[in-house]
Structure formats: structure tokens, C-alpha cells
Length: 271
Image 1 (cartoon, rainbow, N blue to C red):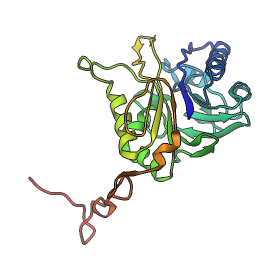
Image 2 (image 1 turned 180 degrees about the horizontal axis):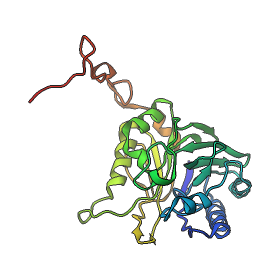
Image 3 (image 1 turned 120 degrees about the vertical axis):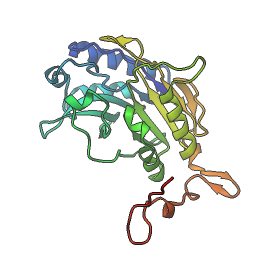
């Protein structure tokens, strides 16, 4: 069993040094309690609600910044997945997530689906998320809005991820009483249909008038939310059999999904 810990952080825009300490404290606190996989929010090191491109860029750090050496030291035996504004070697700014263990940065993923004003500051990533083999299972990152595209979660399942680690910043939306946030429902569906675990770390509170959902949770391979801190066997989802005759991935019919008929024309039916 692996203790997965979603560790909310409340960064302060412009307080770069203070934010580094906040993130290190969140990692250290989780590891002290026995966490072996720690997930931080989206853009945990610099904040989210920027006023202009200059403010967003000021929050950026390179993927080889010494900040991540601190993450690695704090991680100990754990694996940390956290969001940051990445200053790329190409001079562009990305909304990224780093996967870090005691050896340093293992991988960086750049968010491919940017939400709203993110498009004013960030460049979308151009690569599918990596999957990293760890002592606790195979981990693949997605970032926030990426989760709303089922091809992204299915791609990770097809490449044998055990856990999708998702730093997010979910603005709160109205919902009927007693209902899960819609983004949580999407994560639950992704976990159930792909038979893998999903760990979501969301912000709480408000930032410059934006109220966050506070939707951090770990969703098991059956699609049930288990709370923001839980012990779980991440490898259990490797068994994709749903019944003696049904397999979560092998039952797909990709031959029906090309959208083409003979002759290569798109398949569109009139009413």
C-alpha cells in the first residue's frame, strides 16, 4: 500500500521566496506523516491569477532551478508531483508539472490544454505526458483542464500508467446541493473507465477574487473518491478485467471511431 497525499499550498503572487518555503513545508509535512506520493496544486510556486504577462513571467523558473534540489531533499523516499511556471530554454513560458524524487527532477510535463486567460501568458505543451516508473508504480501527470479531454486519460491508461497525478486550480462553480464538483465527477469517470487511480490536488480559499473549489481527492481504480490523503495499492488497477468476458481496454472498438466511411469522407448523419 502507498500513502498518497494531496498537499494544498496557498502561494502569494510576487512572494517568490515565501512560496518556495511554503511548498517545501507542504512536502516535508506530508513526508513526515509517511506520504510516499505527494501531489501539489497547479502553479504552486507562483500563484495563478496574474494581472499581466510580466507578472506571470516573474513567477517563472527553469526546470533545472535549484528550487527542485530542495524538493528532492524534502522528498526523501517519496515522489513529488507539483505545478510551476516554467521558463523554457526557448524563452517561452509554460504551465508545467515536475515529477521529483530524491534523485532530482525525473520529468517535466507542459500543460497541453490551456484554460481561459492562461492562453495570454503560457504556451501550450506539444508532447504527451511522460510516464515515470517509480518504487510505488507508474505515474503520469496531467494538469487541470487536461483531465476534461478523455483522450488524455485514455492515452495514459494505454501506456500502462497506474496513477494520474493532477495538479489543478479549479475555480468554484455553482452546483446542486450534495453534488460533487463537476471536475471531480470527470476524474471519477476517468478512473473508472480506465481502471486506474487519479490523485487531484486543488487549491482552497480565494486568490484575487477567484474562489477555489478545494476539490483535492484521490480516486481509486473503481472511480470512488477516497479523500485527499489515503493509502491505496496503485498497482491494483493493472487488472483491467471487469468481468470474465469484459476488459476495460480490449473491449474498445477503434474500428468504429475513425469517423470515415468507404471513400474517406467524414461520417455525418442527417436528422
